[in-house]
Length: 316
Image (cartoon, rainbow, N blue to C red; front, top):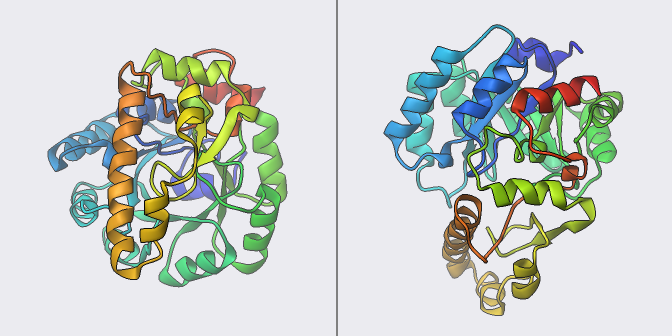
């Protein structure tokens, strides 16, 4: 399973354990590295810069041959912590950064100056070509089967479009829950895959047992798209609470979003409210169950250690 991604990150298998808000942690990434893949954590999972520094140092100390670790940065204006998080990552060092929801130009420039590779989430060819011009090391093709913030194109469509028109490696994100899915993405032309939702139901994840069990009990047909988390379409499990509140933004937000003067602030407020709601659902018992996941939970049948989930992705 040697590909350009395994060469870029010096990993055994072309798999990235995707960064998941509130879910990803150092224990999960350490086990991912031991299993021969890369692991990534959202920088936003750490409330303070000192906590982020401590996590980087822990991962550096635990790094093993054949594994790799990185962090995800939200690079748009809604993340007021972005610049300081980037500074800490560059000071402490990591193997790679994944950028999301904004222009990665500054991140690429600063990260490359200290030898950190940068992969950029993209949902279409236009943005893929843009980040290639900025100097990105690879693009992560977020398709319409991804969990969280997904794209509009099918895995085959976006991989084909990017492979034919950009020269940097394409990593597929979305729709991977078993080895057959990994093989399919590689056959389409991807150099690797980014896998998130199957790792929610891992023993190392520090979310509630209810969240993990939901990923076991629900399937692909139970995933719906909501605008009520970040203002951008996001996939969640269709729990009774999600059905009750609906998936569309409140009408007042839709009106204000059409006004250039208010749009930025409405987005920031929605992002804050939505993240708080998902945090409560993920980390404590609550009837307000807004659990982010993708359709690949279809293949999650029990709560397993990370190493066994990796084994299923490469062997079964």
